[in-house]
Amino acid sequence: MTYRLECPVTGYQDTDVVMLAHGSGGESMQKLIAEMYAKAFPYLQSEHDAALINTDRYQLAFTTDSFVAKPPFFPGGDIGSLAVHGTVNDLVMRGSLPHWISVSFILEEGFPMKDLERIVLSIAEASKKAIVRIVTGDTKVIERSHEIPEILINTSGIGAMRDWKVLPEPKNVSVGNKVIVSGDIGRHGMALMSVRNGLELDPPILSDSMPLNEMGRGLYYYNINPNCMRDATRGGVAAVLNEIARSAKLHIRIDEEKVPVADDVRGLAEILGYDPLVLANEGRFVLFVKDEEAEHALEILHKCEGGEHAAIIGEVVGKHEMGLVTAKTLLGSEKPIHMPTGEILPRIC
Image (tube, rainbow, N blue to C red; front, side):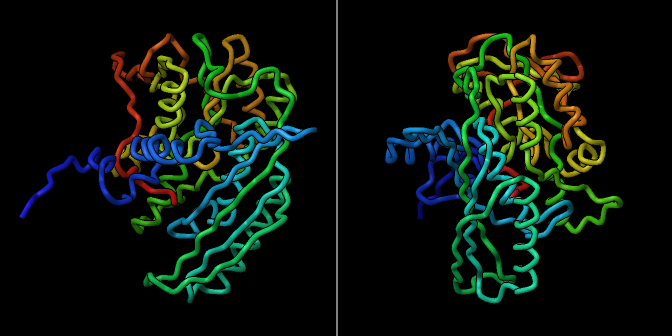
């Protein structure tokens, strides 16, 4: 008999089968995209969650995403509103104005009809708030394979690109840029984790799931031209910063003390052993702007729903061939912030 020894964290990257880590947004997923998908699909725009499509008259942003939330209902939202918000936010982060969305359901036989109706109505309400239209979709029903029947939702979205002076994308991030996070982080991850662990918190931690249209419109209307925007979903702020640092070959330094984390989220994260920087968010994004625009951008975000706790958390301090993210600690030392590896917990989908 042959035994295979491997690290339970990084060993996922070189397995012969798909592991949970490959969908967690961290190192394993990045490697899968780079070494398989990008090689097979030559037109894949893998540095973004939305692709740019050029027509004779317009430039459009196009994105797709899939959702399977456990449980499908959680404090502050559900899989329906989450699907709309996730799709809309990917379009906003690309610099577009979202217009149309498709919604496809994959249902296990036995899924309660009352729950499906509740989710459909939630999708309708979320799309109304985000000012997008559900224009097409599909439904498939598969044989039951779980004790509790599940629901999966796939969405695609199209948005019209805004007329930016410089497109918000990683290659335009430069030394001297300030790093802003649009609000307090980690809410979505801890909201799901509290439910999954049967923790009856009073008051409960609510997910931050929300559309980012208002913030995107505000920045554009007041002539803030972000060098890059990225929503901090799977892998959290740590994953976003590492993705940008690697892509632009930069050293990004943040200040841990300046990262906004609500007391209840920080307390539960400490009890469960999670770093807020890797916790999932569904209504927060990281923004890179010129130094002279940072304070104005912050003022705009503070006036928007969900942006009340936006903060400047760091800056781009130099070039780095491999990409580097570090954090100034509360003790004054500096430590590396790595790309999350293995299966990132808590999984948001």
